[in-house]
Image (cartoon, rainbow, N blue to C red):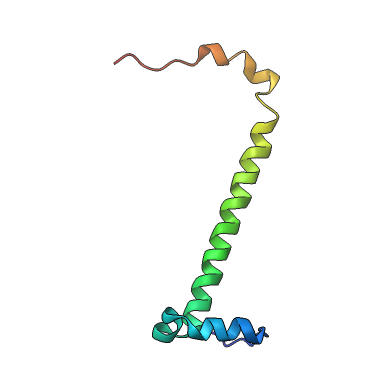
Amino acid sequence: MKPVQITMDEGLLERLDADEEVKRDGRSVVIRRAIAEYLKARRKRRTADSYRRGYAAGVSEELVEWVGEAAWPDE
């Protein structure tokens, strides 16, 4: 791991240090977890946005003819 230096509002730092998870695991661990969660959520939002943009246009004209051809197999 590589050490990094960040600037943090004193009030936020006090609230962070008062947290039980921080007391138990340490600041670095909790901050790393928070960053990992943020990046995961951001990736999910980007993926969802991509799908929304992709499907917003609807079915392209060349695929409209195939819509009626799709069928589920008989069981």
